[in-house]
Image (tube, rainbow, N blue to C red; front, side, top):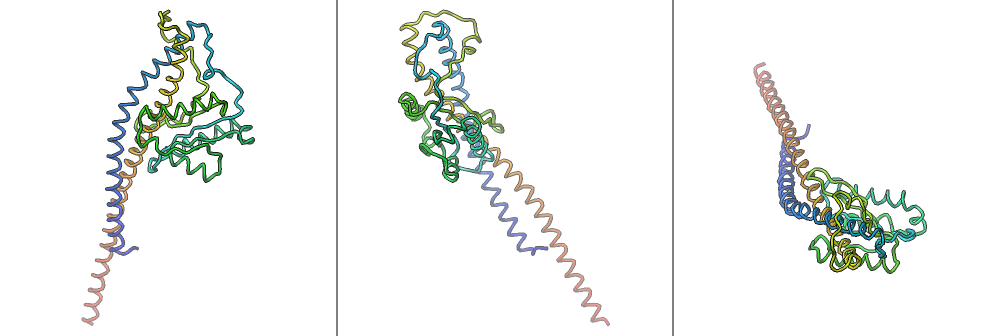
Length: 293
């Protein structure tokens, strides 16, 4: 049985950990509340933009010709892995990494074998893993979460658009955690380029033949790049919000675990203390009996 001093030290250490996890939980909750409001407000805008594009495509009867929506053979593929810069957020990062590797090994086997598949790592945790396993990394970006704004994301999205137009990549896919609620994050694989305009979006409501000014083709040429930039902003904001939800949940569980551990250690301490007192009493009684004899 451990000594009383050792148990007291352990209890003090766990209480110190409890203060840290509790503080981290409150910080994550505050950040989650702020970013959650942003992603909830952004999603209807993204959905409406998709609906407008689908509606225009339907009115043009599929006559849209744009390099950003034209499918081509995926000879060169880029997987954009979105993780966090910091840990202590449960399985948030490992789930995204597993999904990215599954995509590479199952869907793009030939490209991976021929070294035509590379990764773009957004977030330190994903970058560290890819470097450790010696995967081909196109670029690493740690700064995107430090100042998360549409202007900064739009610059990065334009970089991907330019690379796709130049033919550097034939397909760009994102793997990220999508925020559902504070306790649940869904790992999503989403094709970024070429852009898919789903006609289902336009069919969700009764089709209306709007009068466009300027004409539809001009609007599409301008809406497609904007749609891609908004789409990427939503992906990064989704991951950022999901990260704080995962961290808040992980720290909540860690705090609960410390409470249970302190209870068990306190019980163990009381048992050890009672055993020590009983031993001392037995020694006293034994000494008294020896003197009496």
